[in-house]
Image (tube, rainbow, N blue to C red):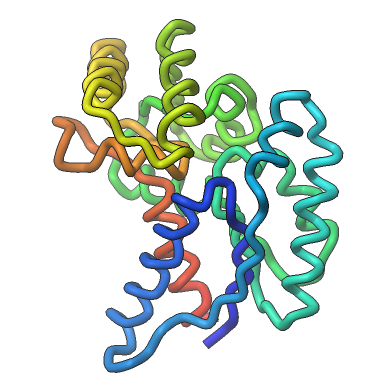
Length: 231
C-alpha cells in the first residue's frame, strides 16, 4: 500500500470526510483492521481564504507547494489536494515534487463519462464556477458540456459555502436554495450536477435530487484510496 499525502484544512470539515472515505474504502477492499496510510498537512483555512479573496494565487501556490514538499519528505508516495478550488494552483504543486498528484477533475470526468451523460451543471465556489482551471480539465478530450448557475445563484452557492458550510453550519433554508438552483440547472438541460466543492456534500446528498449528483469529495477520496492500493 502506498502512502497518501493529504493537503487539507481547506476547510477541515471536508478534510474529515476525505479521511473517513479513504479509510472506509481501504477497509472495504482489504477487510479486517486495515486502514489507509495517510500523512496530513492541514492549513489554517483563514490564511488561505485571505489569499483567495485578494487574488494572491501565486502566494497560495507557493504555500501549497511547500506543503507538498513537506509531505514528500515525510514519505508520501502520492498527493491529494482535499479541495476543488485550490486545484487552481495544482501546477505549482506538481512542479514542486516528483511524486504524482491525483487531480480532482480527472476521476470526476471519468465518472461522468461512464454515466453516459453529456451535459452537467456545476456547483462550487465562484472561482470554480467562473474560471477555467476545473471546467477545462474536466471537459478536455471529452464530450462534456458544463453549465454553471446564473449570477444570482452563483452568489448564493458561494456565500453558503464560505459563510455556512466551511464554518460547520448546515441550514435547511440553504438546502432548499440549493435544491432550487439544481432544479434551474435541470430546466436549462443539465442531466446531472457536479457538487464541485468539497463541502457541498454536507448539505446536498444523492438522495435529495431527481438527477444524478457527482460528489467530487467522494469520487476523489475513493479514487485516492484505490490509487494507493493499486499502484
